[in-house]
Length: 116
Image: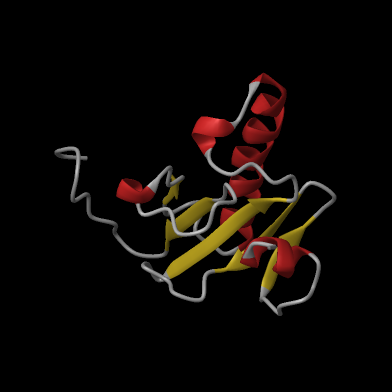
């Protein structure tokens, strides 16, 4: 069964696309947790960060670079943004297809991990 992200990539499900190239797609999250909340999804299916291998390292770095491009497109590059990757159930992973959450557009608190 295809993940929701595979179905978006293959245009079986509509999404508000912010950015796309041959390696990834960036869309607006339909359940945002910040004023600006985008998802950056590699077209290569990697279930989660802990399952990425050495061959995926370049792609992972590439996705971080795309995060800065998307942040600029969304007008949050100068004010600040956060990039989050959930890995596993306890981290809130809900789709087994690695993706980056790009959050910003407002001051972001930090519930876990102490002070900023």
